[in-house]
Image (tube, rainbow, N blue to C red; front, top):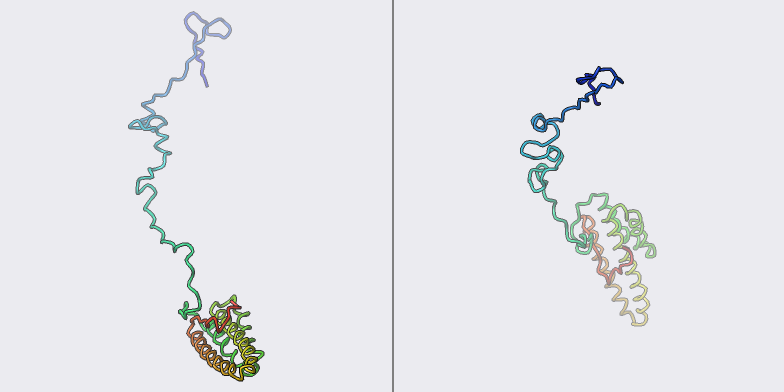
Amino acid sequence: MVDFDKRPTEGGTGEPGSGAEWRQERPAAPDASAGASEGTPGAAAGGTPVGAAAGAPPEASSPDAWGPSAPAPPPYPPFGAPPAPYGGTGAEMERPGPDQTTPAALAHVLTWVVTLCSVVLGFVPALVVYLVYRDRSPLARQHAATELNAWITWMIYNVVLGVLGFVTIGIAWIVLLALWVVYLVYAIMALVAAMRGQGFSYPKWLAFPMVG
């Protein structure tokens, strides 16, 4: 607001419209030095603008600008590094419990029990364990899959060598008997690995990789 002092100058009457000259008093400009000393906006001490000193972020190069430095993150594994396999070498897994070792062992035991009772239905136990535990237990899935592959491969050998036995005058049957013994030895090894919570895989010539 602009205040008008109604004091008349010399020669005036002081009444509006009487030709008197009115004097306008303008507000005085603020003192810059007083504003700086009282903390008002203006130049701060040392010549630094107050606004820049209050709103400018701390220097990024200062180690304590944003507090104590965070520890460096741990190094990541190299890109494309394959995960540790469950089977193939018999390497021990992460200590699976009985809920995983029991079905893995049953996949081997029941396959042989059912096979001795009915050769045609020998694959059923391993198939059931595979279907039930394939999404619940990696150990049981691996053992059931390798046992199922071994049984199917063994049956293929039985059919082929059984027919060749008539042509070779029983020589192929001897090879088939030896194959049964080899299959039994590997099945026992797979059973022991399953009870220990370890992965196991038959040789590829004895278990064609059909089910994974």
